[in-house]
Length: 69
Image 1 (cartoon, rainbow, N blue to C red):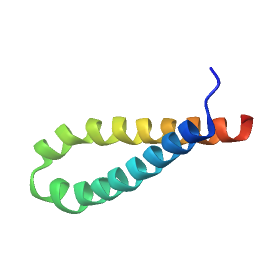
Image 2: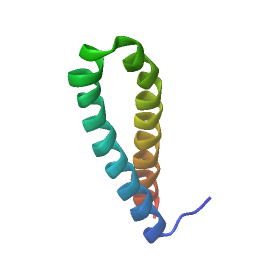
Image 3: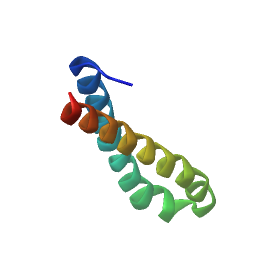
């Protein structure tokens, strides 16, 4: 599937923003949640990991599309 330059920029922007916000959420998870309530912290861990994976994939798609276009 061929993506336009605008679509690639949107994917790249969404991926970078997602990575930024979920990396900071991962830090607060470590700093606050893990030290206060381990059960709740390990409940949130898969959400953080999946969201970081989605952000990385969106960034990858944006960069790949920019290189091909």
